[in-house]
Each structure stands twice: as C-alpha cells, then as structure tokens.
Length: 79
Image (cartoon, rainbow, N blue to C red; front, side, top):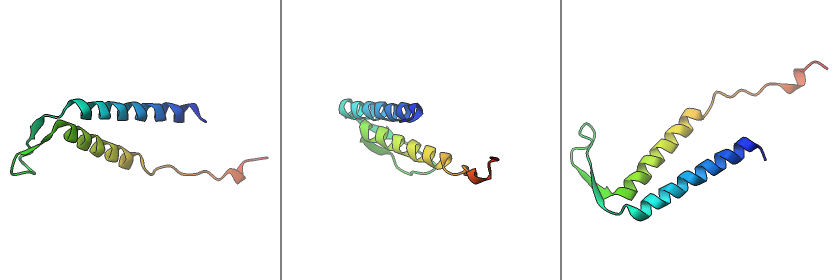
C-alpha cells in the first residue's frame, strides 16, 4: 500500500470521527440565515448543519479534483 494513500485514509477517518463527536455533543437548535437564497430562517440541530456543510465541502472538493489527469502511453518509451 502506498504511504500517501494510507495518510489520506487516516485523515478522512479522523475527520469522520470529529463529525461524529460534533453530532453527539451539539444537539441544540441553531438559526441559519441566507437572505439572498432563503426567505425564511431555518432552525435545525447544529450537528445536522455541521454534517450538511461537511457534505457540501466534500462534494465541492471532489468535483474540483476530478479530471485533468492524462495517461501517458508507456509503450513509446525508448528501449
């Protein structure tokens, strides 16, 4: 297994652990205002909002890191 892959797996596992801990300890209702998009105030548990913001960030990062990788033709190497 490559070392970088192991580091990435451990990092994601640590982030998920923090997300679970936030969900366990932040059960109070919080207000969310976004006037240009939402006309009314949204009241949800803080843990649910943490999870939603994490999901949006994860999806955004995935979309930004997709594509742009071109495979090289290894058969054209000089012998």
